[in-house]
Length: 216
Image (tube, rainbow, N blue to C red; front, side, top):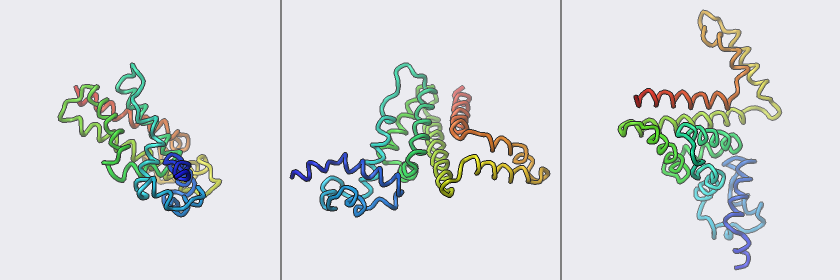
């Protein structure tokens, strides 16, 4: 019983997050977790039933602060931006969270995020018939773009800088025939200089602007 007390669920979740951050979801196995915690798999199963439960617990632990209610006095737009940026940063640091959140809409963390966004949509005065679509658009944009940004960053070879990648891609766009690709040719320089986080938030603001217009 002493071993079970020492090996708490919290310790298991912390070790799982470390494995997920360093090895990805495929690297999270009960064998690897047992080795890291220096215990047997049976002791871990005493606290968590399976990998899905462990992934859900790890996601909840990382997002615990974000899933609580926001600061008093914040506007609905400010609340939505805070949720969006919090998720963007969390997924950038822990890319596996993006996959986990998009896997099942019924997962605890996803439900809480959707609820928090939905309440702010209601606070904006969006008509009942448009609330689900407005909140869904925000949720899908936030999870999709944040997840893709994290995946792009980790698809590069170790030691490759973001400026190198964007510089090479920008040069490719600049070399396109402006007759066939007038837009990409025109914005090639913006691609090289843009900030992912600022661009992400600009997209959130565009959706919020659309929601405001639709409400009127």
